[in-house]
Image (tube, rainbow, N blue to C red; front, top):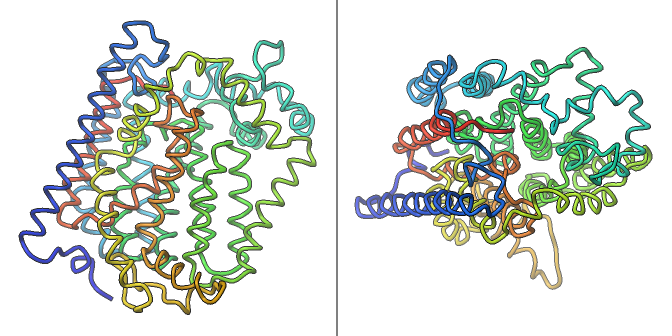
Length: 487
């Protein structure tokens, strides 16, 4: 197996210079996009265009401030950028995952505490639009599930609050269950969100390693720790969503039908956390296709897990498709009717940049450039650019008329998880964006996809990682200190 340094070496000074120049061009394009979104947002808000986002493209308010979380966030960033980055390349795998999770928790909490304990954590989930507002009224869970769809539409006496109405009942159930086990209230719920959201820092590398990209897993982990989106993972229901989706995909990646079944169960529950997670199916297909034991039993086990959870909700009285139909109507009963699609369809991407960080454009560029070489090496048995080996035809296990399908599938799979997973996440984001059902607030809504987009950062030269991680940390600090974000 080649070392991480070898994997990231670019032969020849001219090619290295060209690569860095291309990364800077991608960074410049990001800067132009962000500046355009901010300026257009200021103009449209000045004209009363109904963006309903004071700091468009983010759903936030301009309010420069600092707090006692400020020095803590700086300390975490310094530790990760210094010894943490070096240690990630040599540490034992189990210890690295534990340390990564703890660092992600510390980073998320410190960013939340910039706003103070109460405003940054306790009160975030207790406002009227949030899930905790509804928890005291749920005395009978089966009854709540049976009548959930009837309360989605607005302007009726018992309408659900905004966040509860906009999601399937699984989202509300999470906080009801926390309350039932004695973890009710804003502080306990917020801390649970932070702890669960940080598990994506474990789940994504576990997925990559299970799919044969161990070195990419180590390279990506620090980028997941210093995720700018941690600004919204702190005390947000989307933190739980991100953790559940990532864990479900990780279980799909690990060998064996039992883990595939567990992954299917988690992803089935994820479908009942957010309607948009039907798009996670693209990522799930990629993970299952990249597994080394591609047997029908694995696919059936994963599908069975999703089916079991869906059947339980249907039996309880909630039908996902009926809920979605009502949610579309509720969506346009609110601010979505005012928010102009012509602005948000591209400004959403600027918001995603602030959540995933400035490394996103250069990383995706590098992933695209790595694809042709991996495509040409299909079937050769040689290792891909960021994996232990490229899948050969024998690994694919798929047939087709006159053998036509098998070589093409082998070529696609040879691109490897560090290309295919970001590509799948990008496809999901594009679908969500073009649908018109994601106008604003995507800096938190798309977090479950953003962590998979960052897998592309494994393609960046190792010697540049510290610079890109510094940019990631500065982005998070700038957003959190200049703006008062809303979960």
